[in-house]
Image 1 (tube, rainbow, N blue to C red):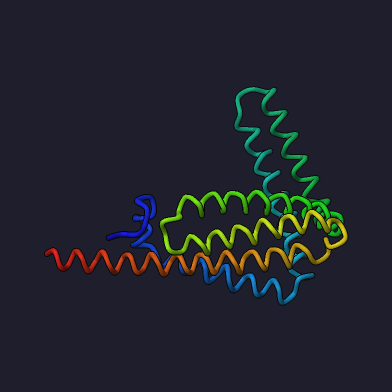
Image 2 (image 1 turned 135 degrees about the vertical axis):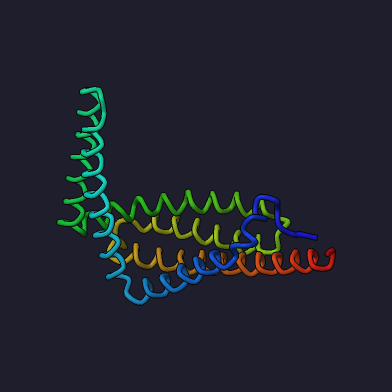
Length: 193
């Protein structure tokens, strides 16, 4: 008898990818915790460069649109992305303060979403770890918002590190459950043949 909800059945054959994602999250989390100020700086620069690339993409897309009014809006959005990206790269401390605030709200939203997911998987044995992951993420977001802006220098690195470690652990647990379900279904298939 399968313990997995039908929606997760296709993941059985791909449990190794879930495990790999969990290991990557887990290792990345410990690396981030090893150097929180560096992890914060890397996060700020990465976001800045992604905004610049996105802005260029918006401007390129604007020239592919047929209406001039729409093109102007896409160009404006692209320029705003580029300006924000350059500002983030040039003034990383201010960007860290702003990103820390955004991260706090994102962690709150992610924690709520994971908690809803965990409760929808209550019949699974790993639902408790997923719920724990959700509560940790939610708590990190709330703490970040309460302490903002004083902890912006290191908060991005610390919070992302802890979140990655807990998310990695929950992915690893889910992958082991998927692996066990796959082996169990293969055994039943062999016995039926």
